[in-house]
Image 1 (spheres, rainbow, N blue to C red):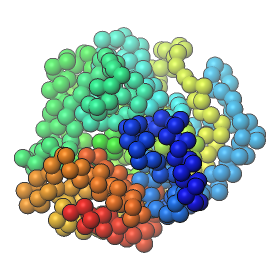
Image 2 (cartoon, helix red, strand yellow):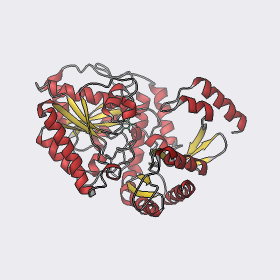
Image 3 (cartoon, helix red, strand yellow):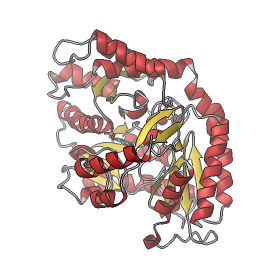
Image 4 (cartoon, rainbow, N blue to C red):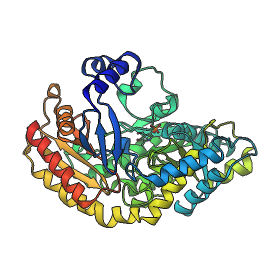
Amino acid sequence: MNRPITGELQALDRAHHLHPFTDFKALGEEGSRIVTHAEGVYIHDSEGNRILDGMAGLWCVNLGYGREELVEAATAQLRELPYYNNFFKTTHPPAVRLAEKLCQLAPEHVNRVFFTGSGSEANDTVLRMVRRYWALKGRPDKHIVIARENAYHGSTVAGMSLGGMAPMHGQGGPCVPGIEHVRQPYWFGEGRDQSPEAFGRACAQAIEDKILTLGEDNVAAFIAEPVQGAGGAIIPPESYWPAVKAVLAKYDILLVIDEVICGFGRLGEWFGSQHYGLEPDLMPIAKGLSSGYLPIGGVLVGDRVATTLIDDGGEFFHGFTYSGHPACAAVALKNLELMEAENIVERVRDDLGPYLASRWSELAEHPIVGEARSLGLVGALELVADQASGARFDKSLGAGSLCRDLCFANGLVMRSVGDTMIISPPLVITREQIDELVRLARQALDETA
Ligand code: PLP
C-alpha cells in the first residue's frame, strides 16, 4: 500500500472509470480514494489509513467486513452451482431456502418473495406489481403511485421516478408517468413553524389531499421509506405513520414500504415497518439482506397481492437473469442465520440503538448543530450557522461537504446530504467504537465551525 499504487490506480480510474453519482470533472481533478481492504467496522485505503466506516458502505455492510462465514457460503455455492435461473418451472436450493427464511422472519401476512438483483430492480418490480394487481382486480384505472419528495427508491428509470430527488428528475427524463409526489415528513427542514406532531399530521393530510385531487379510483399505492435514508436520515414525527395508515385504509390504497435501508435490523426490528406498526402490502428489500457481500434484492409480497397475482394472474411477464442468483441467495441466507445466531436485531434495539442515541444526542450541544437525531443505528446531525435561530449556513459555503471531508481525513466515514450529516454504521459496531465515532464526529464539527 504505497503512493505509486495510489497514483497508478488513480490515473487509470480517471482515464476509464465513470463513477456513479459523481461529478466526472471533479474526479479528474482530485483523484479517488482507493479502498483496498477492510475488517470489522474499518476500511483501509491505499495510503495506509484506517477509517471507521460510519456508513456501512452504502448502508449495507450490516454484519461488518471480513466475515469468513459469508465468504465460505459464496465459494461453496459457486463450486456447487454457480448459476441457474428461477424462470418458468425451475429453481435451486438456495433460492427456495432463502425465500422460506425471509417469509419466516417477515410479518405473518407475508408469505411470498420475488427476487431481484438490487433495490432499484425491486422498486421497478413494485411499480409493475401494484398496477398488475389493480388490473387483475378489474380496476385498471387505479394506476397512480403516490411517493414523496426527496425520497430515494433507486436509479433505474422507475426507481428514479418513484424517488423524489429533483436533480435526478432533471436528468435523462422524462420520468415514468402516473407517479405523484407529496411532501416529506422532514420536521427540521420544513416544519419548524409547528410542533413535530402537528407537522406529522399535516404531512399525512397532504397524502389525503392528493388522493382526493387525483380521485381515489385512480390511486394504486403509496410508497415510502420508514425512515428516509438517502434524503437525510429523516425520522418522521410519531404522529405521521398512524395518520398515513388511516388515510390509506380509508381509500383502499396499497402500502409499499421500501425496506432497502431500514430492513434487516437497522431500526432495531427485522423490518422498519415493524417499528412503526405497519402492515405493508409490498416490501422491497436489498442491501442488508446480504450485508452487501453479493448483490441481491427482492420484494416481500403480502397475502393480499400474492393471492390475486397467483389465483387470477396467469404468467407475470417480469423477472431478471439474476433473480435469486444461487451464490447471492446462499450468502443472504447465511447472513440472516448469522444475524439470528448473534441476536443482532435485539442488540440494536435493546443496547446499541439506545447507547448511540444517548451519545449522539450530546452532539446537539455543539454550536453548529441544530438537531441531533437517531433511531436504531441510523442518525443525523443538522448543521446550522446559528444555533439559537436554527439559521442554516450559506449554501455556497458547502458546510456539509467540508464536514464530511474533515471526517474522512480524521478517520471516519460520515455522509453529507446538503448540510445534514448522516451515519448508518455496521450493526456489529461496539459501544467503544460508537464512542470513537462520536469523538471523531465532534472533532470534525469543531474543525468545521
Ligand atoms: N431504496 C432505498 C430506500 C435505497 O436507499 C436504495 C439505495 O440506496 C434503493 C432503493 C436502491 O437500491 P440499489 O442501489 O440496490 O438499486
